[in-house]
Length: 210
Image (tube, rainbow, N blue to C red; front, top):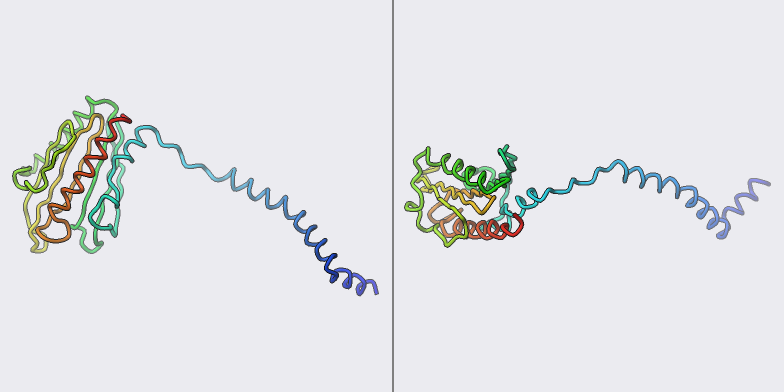
C-alpha cells in the first residue's frame, strides 16, 4: 500500500512540480561549479601590444584581393628590433603560382625601419630584377617615404608572367606586396595595382598609431 500511495502522490501534477523544483535546486550548485571551472581554466586571449595591433592593421586580407583565396599561409619571421608577419594567399591549392603575398615589419624606430627597408630591397636586387620599367602598369601614386618595385619576366607552365615584389616604408613600418602577374587572367597587372593601392592606403593610415 505504501508503494501505491507513493506512486499516486508522485503522479499528482503538484507533486511532480515539487520534485522538479527540488531537482533544479539540487542541480544548481553543480551547474554553477561547472561554469566556475570553465571560467578559471579557460585562458583569455592575450591582449595585443600596440605594435602587434599596428601590424595587424597594415596587413592586407581577403577583402583586399581580386578573388577569394582558397588557401592561406601565415609566417612569423624573426625581426631584429621589431616584429613581422607574412601572409600568402593562393587562388587554387593545385596552382600555387597563382598567389598574392604580403609581409609587414614594424620596427622599433624609424632608423631601424630604414635599415630594414634597405635589407628587403637588397634581397631582390641580388637577383637582378628589373623594376618599374618592366611593368609600368603597376605604378601608382603612393604615400610611402620610400618605395621600390622589382619584377622579373618568365613563364610558368607555358604562361607568360611577371613575378613582382613592391617594397615600401611608411615611418616605422616596412611592407612587401608580391604576386605573379599574368596577361589576361588569374591576376592581371590592373588587379595587382589595385591591391598595391589598398596596401599603400592601409600602411599610410598606420602613421597615426606609430
